[in-house]
Image (cartoon, rainbow, N blue to C red; front, side, top):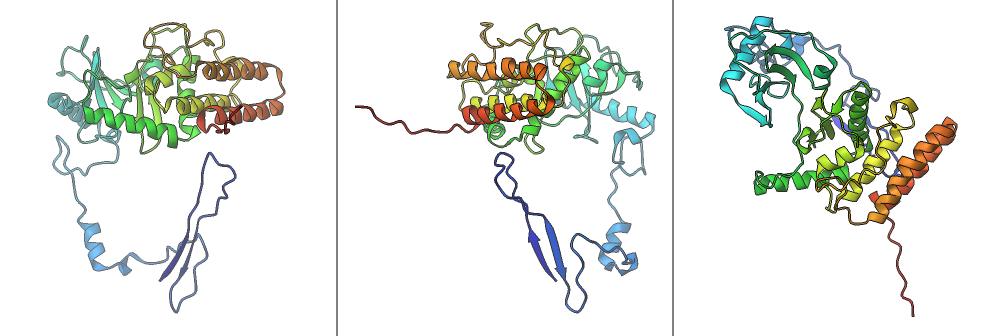
Length: 362
């Protein structure tokens, strides 16, 4: 059987790169060729080799707490409520920590380790004896990935993969710091624009509903495998008059003062600009958007260590003054063209600067 493969070469940041269609061609000696992108399902199960049939019949079973016969389902929430509570109880008794903040600890659910976890608010949680599933959730619960309440101070959460990239030099190991630095470089060089649009949209949509992201560095998780950045802590109490999602994300990724900072800022600005094509002007939170987001003077502010302040101001002005003004005044098609122009400029200034040779003067 001969298989010929054609692969796609796709560079998101080089629109001149040709993209080839993925396809497969098959030829089995003595039989007619199948058409491209087609599969035949006419074979009977009895035609499978005996070794494969045996594996199908004896599939491996994983026993869950409180059950002697049940095969592990694909999703925890497919189980009866009694069994869900037993699994949660088991996780709370084991106390395998996934992370610990000032107020809460998040515990691993070993039977569903990358699907669900449990958050315990240490200030108000009183015990694990009378767990109940309460599916009455408010908008703040939903923003924070809560699946159900288990009791006072206890919540069942959807597991969000990734790690925070804020480097904590008092607690991170040297190997941990190296991992975070490698991921920062990966974000700058390889994460697509869509990754940044998604997290900006997450923060902006919640802000629209009165739910504010707590912009601490450890509240932003990065998963390099699926190239996603996710904000995980939204509060009904937190209210930042200096609101700016670009500064929030840049600060949490901890790239300020590094060689990766300009590229990350460029991708954030371009993602925000692209998002402006489709969002409504009334959803931009212009009443609280801080256009001077790096002039506050606090030690841990974003952009405090940005090496070229003049360049930073130029990019800020293009986005938060010129582009937003164009959003208010230009027809849609003309505005979209202007967005593309701004993105091209940002690309050349921050992401992939054009190095113009300097000639000596005599």
